Image (tube, rainbow, N blue to C red; front, side, top):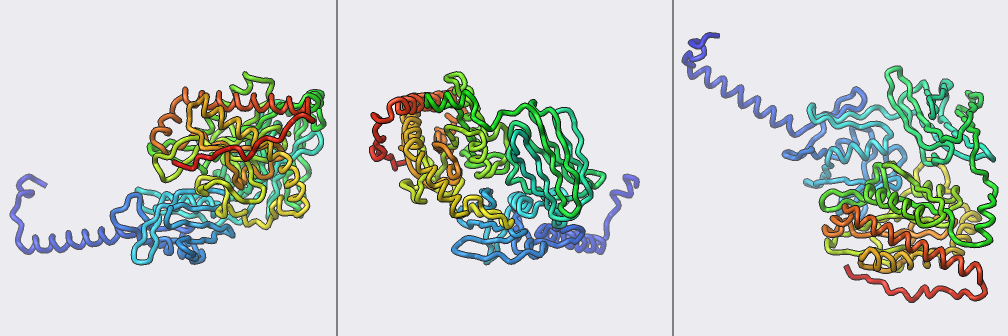
Length: 522
């Protein structure tokens, strides 16, 4: 086209046709902007969205219908979803989703009786509940949901005498997986994809340090990489039986014996504390509370727990174990199971607090309430317990549901109630005097993370991440060092207390558990 042709006069008829075409395109574009496409496998479904939202808010009932999921039940401002036999409760007021011990953000907007959900929050929750990787693609304005996985593999770790085992149990027939060693790791290649892994009973130990799955490989397989410890000297794979599709790997090596060592016996004679498990709360997809500027509880408590571990190692002859040393998710049962397996003398769960009152400040320490009642006003959204924590609907009974098991554990934990309180009191005193943080008192609450622990167990909230001032402190290395120093000093004082009572049991008096005055003000 020449410059002359470009500037050629346009007739009124051409202008009118152009106007009609432009108007039609604008209307079409505006209409398309009110929908995205949801692909369930290869099937495409239009999903209504709220105009002007970014990321978009998708109409929830349309998404569930497209995925052939049941209509949610509304009960007192709570939506109850059932996805893959898992229950998810959505609080429409707090805009949080609760499922499988996870609290996840779930931003919603309500329009004329319909609920619209923020796309990124919806993809995360559906990914967790359906066991498939749900993806929202901004460029194409589409959501992709793979077809439901049919194969489920349950992964367990256990100890048998002086050996450790990895068990991978499949819910249906599968060709035998291949196991090979890659330096200090074992690679299990499963000729099937996709697979949903149930990892509730995978507990890291001195033989199996970690596990990482790799899904949807180009050859149609799935791989599991198990990182093995330095004390493992060999492994054996049991014959694969098609009628009972299970891969069983036995690890041998120079492991700490289960029987009491000389140090254990000496420890029992002298009393005192030797093994301590530190539990950094939350982790992985469970971020915990979030501060005003975006600081995450899971990151703060992991950093603080590592500092505490180092200071305890420097201060005394303690063996320290962290339930997690990286950003991973652990169930509540797994955390206490690690402590029990380690035969810990103390279990310390590390958290930070959060409430809607911005000026709430200070620290508080909890020990377990045996009767399920609490003498503190505990916000369930900031705890890893409550009705939102439903057992996974996989048909497996809760190990603590058996009457005899529950009675025996109840007797064992009752034995440690006073010691848990003593430790909690020392921690509160030292946080106040050494870290200079306001004490909100020692409190009782039915915290699930403390249930199942066969030793004195406490949970302390170091500060309020929801308070802008204390959030700034939690970013400070010096403040976190002060917190770690205070808790270390508290453990040393408690250790002295235990030793003194062990040497003169007849002279020891009950600790004044009712003398603590709780500060209930913000």
